[in-house]
Amino acid sequence: MPRPPTPSAALSGADRLPRGHRAGEPGLRRASTAVFLAGLAVFAVLYAPQALLPELTRAFAVTPAAATLSVSGATAGLAVGLLVLGPLSDRVGRTAVLRAALAAATVLAVLLALVPAWEPLLVLRVLQGFALAGLPAVGVAYLREELDASVSSRAIGLFVGGTAIGGLSGRLLAGALADLGGWRAALGATAGLAVACTAAVWLLLPASRRFVPVPRGTPVLQQLARGVGDPVLLGLYGLAALLMGGFVAVYNAGTFRLEAPPYGLSPALAGLVFLTYLLGSVSSPVAGALAERVGRRVVVPVAIVLTGGGLLLTLAEPLGVFVAGLAVLTVGFFAAHGVASGWVAARAALGERPVGQAASLYSFWYYVGSSVGGTVAGRAWADAGWPGAAAVAGTGIAGALVLALLLGRSRRLPGR
Image (cartoon, rainbow, N blue to C red):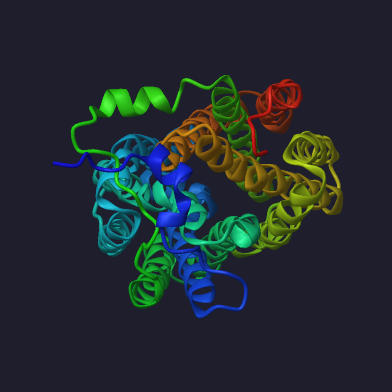
């Protein structure tokens, strides 16, 4: 009885698989659009409560640090989900995991708008985060497998841009509707957006044609070990945790800062600051195209320096300078993240490691950083105001820059 093909066999004998979707083909447009919409839905649902943190603090009589758990609890659940859904996608396929995860997360989004108390809300957010892991667990791996190499980096950049627009949409909807109908109306509207996007993904997403399953006899722990055996992949995981921790620290504490003196903005006006995410949706695909020309090892550290420069601007008190700092920080963050996530997929493929596993581990540490950075920033804001929160963010960004510079000196694999 012949042995089932391994991922390495598939990579070395790519001529035995159908070719990837290329520029101008309907399959490329459908795949790119579907994954873009999935990113929009997932991140709208995931981060909508971030714009509601002061509102949740008042509605449930909890502290700012406790309110941040509505975000950190979901990202923690998402991180755990990645360890399950990533290996699962390497066995059963990308599209099945993505569709089921989106459906489950959407149902939970509807329930969250009806939840009666704080503790059940946190439980549902953790469960929702687990379900939302379906997209980051498979999105990059799906695009890397199903698209031709000539267009995959740009499509991954578009996908990351969709996550930026999703984060923006969820925050804007939540902030605007919190003024009109409170946090329940805000979460209900976000759930409606998720329902529409999930239906579109089910209709548009092409079935996998180039997916090669990991043999079912392969233990999950052995599969996991293959994703951590490369020092470059380990460095990219650490970079994701530190950079995301710093980024979420800024936006979690920034929501409280905008509603506090001297600004005193309403939730709707404070939510408008998240329009800076539109810049991230542009910078990510632009950075992906630039990385194809000059290399990821150059683009990633430059983008992180830009992120740190934006953080420094937020230390100024004038509202215009603060918002400009958020804009610069967002451009740099999404540029670095978009290129780094593509770097993980490429490195894993060339090193004959499971791409889905590597992408999941990258996202796992990304959301670990989000959970830790977001919660610590809430406490830093309560204890030391904006300088304390900025110090938390700056520590993460500086650590990510050190790792990026070290990665730039790492050994290249053949074919890179």
